[in-house]
Amino acid sequence: MSDNKPTGPTVIMKGGTSSSKYDKEVRLREADAKRRRDLEARRFAAVRNSHKSQQPTTARMGSHSLINQSSPRLVLYYLNKDGSVRQECKSEITMIGGPTPGEMDTIFALVCPACLARGVPQGEAQIMVRNSHRKFDIDDRKKGVVVLRDPFTGAPDPVIVCGTVTVHDTIRCSNYNCNWAVKIGDSKVREA
Image (cartoon, rainbow, N blue to C red; front, side, top):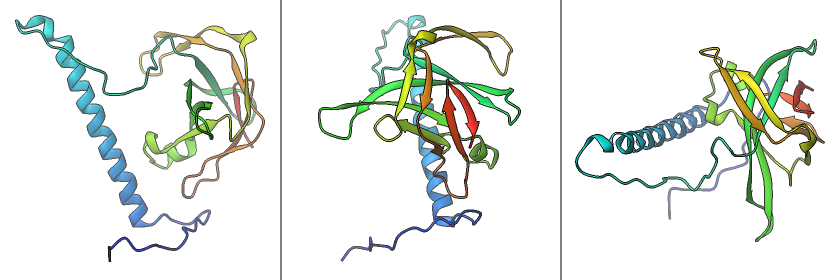
């Protein structure tokens, strides 16, 4: 018999603490993601610098993701309680396999600022919003270029947006000890 015995259901208590096993799993996933990002960065650096050497170097994409600067994007405006914009965030829209074979589903991501404030790694603080789970609409009448400011340098950062998004349901963060919930209308993220 294997050591992988079935366990009971996981109970998440709001305001409680996460288990050390869960915390260890989060740290391991984040370390693995960092290792893979570093590997890809070294591969791209090798290709960038290959013109300096005599031997040609080739590279291939290590990911099937085809998202680049010209991919459809949204700009999400995180609002304060008084309605002023606290933060502007870019989000890509992409298609993934749908709930039934052969079907495609539209998806976009947003980040939970409450989790980030608690020190949760950004990769674990992302919320994926699938159109099949939380119905949303893109208003493409508002597509065009939005110029954001780079948060580190202050330089202009133009973003080609495919429009604004409105989600027809409340979005909730599913991480341990997080009760962050929002409504999104016209790409404005308001706490619910």
